[in-house]
Amino acid sequence: MSRARETARAIARKFATDNPYQVAEQLEFKVKIKDLPSSVRGFTTAIFGIRFLVINNALDATFAKFVCAHELGHAILHPDCDYFEIKDTLFPIGKYEREAEEFAISFLSSFSAPEYGEPLERFYRRIGIPVAGGI
Image (cartoon, rainbow, N blue to C red):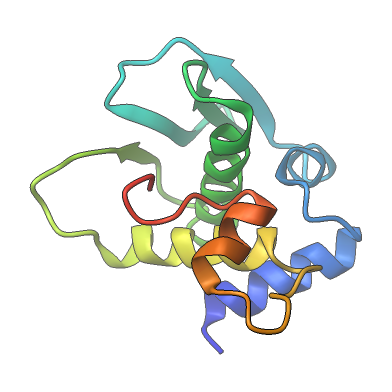
């Protein structure tokens, strides 16, 4: 299991929730919902030692929760860096973005499992994880 997956599952177990907003609050990260350019889904940054997870207010609640989990992954896995999630770029996804995606998916699915015979895409939709084309 990857470091991102292990960390996500450990965090969910520690706080007994797969709600990224609650975990962010417990870890004293400030979550802000802001008007951002449409190409920016969210980002994490630190200002005077305070970590912020900033989410685009144009996202629906389900997608915003996923972005919050993604940015929480950055804040936990890559604490010394600032990250922007920009959609529709021509550049391949980098290591840190892949790790944040793995973290978000593992975190949000920590207390759920696919039903017998359930396709992974349907499972993801059922628990609020965007599937290909939505990420």
